[in-house]
Length: 441
Image 1 (tube, rainbow, N blue to C red):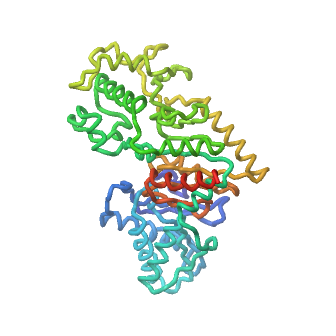
Image 2: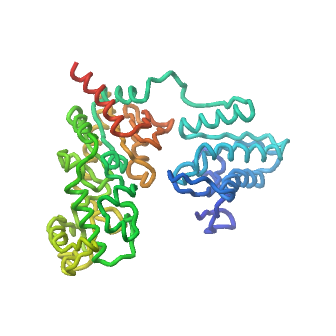
Image 3: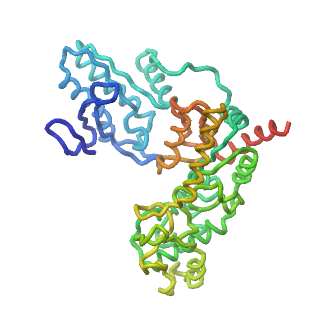
């Protein structure tokens, strides 16, 4: 991270350190910039002692910098977010104690300083963690300044009620939906079953191939063609998730926004004019340069030619002429998926999605209609595609977010909606049973 402050413009800020800048247009005199330790999310990784120390240092160096700037006779309020617990993957339950103890220790070392420190939690689960920690460690009750809490029905029931009473539904599907249909990109078992030759070469999951690889064009296109032929044209869902979503699709004014390039919505009979595949589609190839914004082609002719010369023993293309070349410039080609600035997005799909969303927003704003975003399996690999935009949508009155996610189901306090920590297939079955029962009675 680089920061700009007096005398230090352009310097790199290292993990565990902080620097203050003016608050400018923000409702704060100063803003502290700090870099927390980054861990792997959902991999069972426990922070090391050095990572724990770095996290604590984020809090103490912020306080040190503030004291140096403001002086020991100042009266200040310092508000901290839950550093490193989002994209950086530090477990929230472990980060809570580190944060509190770091701040308490620092304040005890400055007993005459009339400062107030606030732990500003973003998720309800974080609020609960801080409340529990203060109660158990200090026998003190945390003061919570948040929307008043009332007794809530079960998450499933609340989700069903939101969807049942909605006028518009946006199905927002991440990798977790594909996983719920058996297509789990992180599963070694799924990979070994469908790509045994690649497994013998030392590869473990489909997810490994998202990004550059050190392989020959023959092996690269052997895998791409085999994978595309499997997931884009022959995959049979192992659970009824798409059947359930189709029932929802036909019950409401619905659009689909997905980060999945596997085309499972189209394969399962959803109308293509109501699908926006924001990250691309395996059914298309494009020029890797690209030589023009129109250099996108149907993969089928290339796929058929490649599969005809795919060696099942090596998973390589045996005819070099079957390696795709751009029909316009004869340059290298790639699957039409968002992997860099070369990606050519479908302007037609995007325009249709934006037009539908604009219409829904107008109806919500002017005619008191309601829009529910049903987000399924959207995690933190690419949160800017679905997860964060969905949270922003749900900050609007009349819009709610139903988040189905086993691990990351929390909905921010600033967004309307509910999170459901259940397998997508199980949750959808219960929700749709309730929705359809009320629709038919």
